[in-house]
Image 1 (cartoon, rainbow, N blue to C red):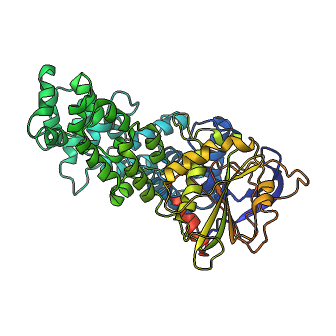
Image 2 (cartoon, rainbow, N blue to C red):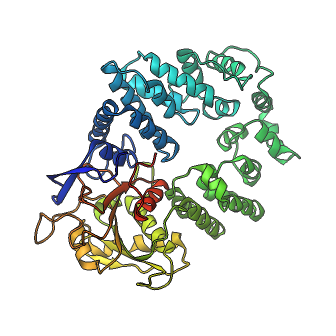
Length: 527
């Protein structure tokens, strides 16, 4: 099976002119996909250049190894939780294969990219926008499989709207799905979706109980709708009608006050809860209801099912004005980073705080690459065993920020990771704005058992000798792990050498991959 450290070195340079190394196509694609917010500019690459590089890599790998590509797309969407990248990967892989007449795996690739009910429409919008209105049979069949698996009464109510270029009915019209054998009501759902789209004045089929109850709520006079919130069983009635908080706000045609929020909070998912903590406080949601929200954040199973990227808990913490959420958000982040390994011996963790790391991970996010690095570094340090360095039975992490210089950031046992992230990022301006990995290693490596470098890997050349890689001054016998937050093509880490590894991404799976490598297990793909 392919290895993460399978790469070919070359004389290429990083974007800042430092010594760099090229990866093989699969490794390049992997690191780009798990860090790529499609259509977004980055510090060193425009959106157009980055997206074209992504497509080129997909085409290359899809023609080399379709089975690998299918496993990759499945993992990328289901485990790494990268939605847009999965859609693009599936579409471009199938397109490239169809251009040369390759069959097999195409239908499965399309279906694998769709794990939420709005994604068949997303995929069709991408395909037609990129490759024209003619949709090949394998694409239609893969979408048909996804529709039968994903379309439900709740998903129709939640995702089907005029704001979408491809509504549920448009997908149904194009791919002609067959209702799933274990969903006898699904044929009626397909017909109702078509009625909605084409404005046919037909009643909601009796087999669709949730949508029938929703229609009853929508038929109520506006003046009487708020009474539903206060009536006995009002919360249950809203949930039985599949009423999301977004729909409730429009249905009330008035403010989302405490009563409105408290009625819908029990049926909200964790992502929606985490995004609305400020709204809860501003509306005056009671402490009793807030405690129930916090209990859900502290539930490891619910956090796992939410599939939220770890940094979203940091984002929620920053947005929440009240201290009543802090402990629960700390617990949620702990569950989301449960894969962080506890490492024996001494570990040096270097987190890049340079100017390029201050770019947000996407245009709509306030979270920066620096925040991702601080989260990884603080989580590793907090998980370290023992309270002293050098013990054979305990672990210790030296957390260091670096740019043009370095700063030590001690992390005590039992601290709040969220607070340590904030404290670390506030110090980032202490050491300038250039990425100087070799200098940082030289200044801080002192017989550690392993080194972890969290960076976009775009280092400046070493002051005294520009032919040194990022692992200079570290013995070949000491493992070096690069955790790449950006996925640029040139990398400062020579991963062809033994004991040199590179992983990346924003999901908790980066900890799983790193944990496998750090404990000496084979560096196989995580799928």
